[in-house]
Length: 304
Image (cartoon, rainbow, N blue to C red; front, side):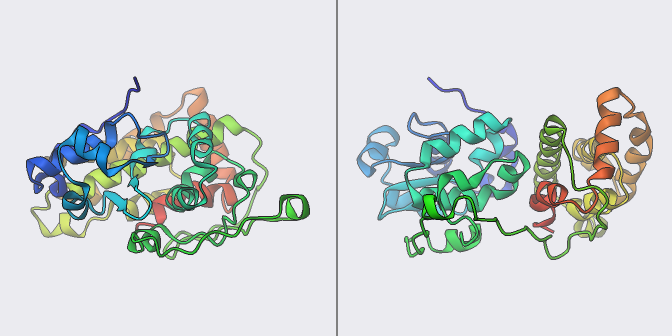
C-alpha cells in the first residue's frame, strides 16, 4: 500500500469547487489508485477505471483537464502536478524516471513538465538515452493529448554518449539577468535544499493566485513577480518563502499585498542567521548568473 500526499487546499481551489461530485471523486481517484506511479503518468485500462471508479473515462476526461490528461490511444493518464507535490529528494526523482524509462512517450512528457525540478536535483537525463533537448513543451504536449506528438529521437549510446553536450538553459522571458560570479557550486546538499525552497515558493505562489481578489491592489499583485524582484536583490530564499507564506495565511487582512510582503521580509530576512541559513545565503549570492540558479528558478520565472 502506498501513501500519497494530498493538498487539503484542493478543496478551496476555484477549479475544484466548480466540479460536480463525480468529477471530484475521479480527480482524487487518479491521484490515489494503486497503479499511479511516482511520476504520476501511468497506463491504466478503461475497464479497470470503470470497475474501480464507476465512471467511463470518456465521460470524465474533458472536465478533468487541465489537471489530469487522458491519452485514449495509449490508455495513459497524466496527473500533471503529482510529481511536483510528491517529490522531496533526488532518490524519488530517479525512481520516478526509472519507472517510465522504457516508455519514450511517457518519458518525454514527464521531463517536459518537470525539467526544472530534475535539473535542480542535478539528475543526469542523458542516461535515459532520449533526446531531451528537442522534447516539446508541457503546453504543446497537453494540446496534443490525442497523441499527435512526434516520437523522440533515440540516441546512439556508444557513438554519442561521450560527445553529447546538453544545450544550456536560458532564462525565461521575464527572468532577471545576472552577471556571472561563480559557476562552481560544489555543495550538492545546498543545491538540493535551495531547490526545495524554490519549489515551496512556487507552490505558495500557486496558492496565492487562487485566493479571492477583492480589491484592485490584490488583482494587480503577482507573487512570482514579487519573488523575482527579491531574488534579484539577493534576499534570503527562506525569508522570501516565509513572507509569501505569511501573506497566504493573512490574505484577508492585507489590503496591499506588495507592502505586506515587504513588511514581513524586512522583519524576517535578518533573522535567518542560523549556520545553515548563513551558508544558504552566502552560496545563493555566489550562484549569481550560474546555470544552477537559472535551473532552480526556471519554474518560478516561467510562470510570470
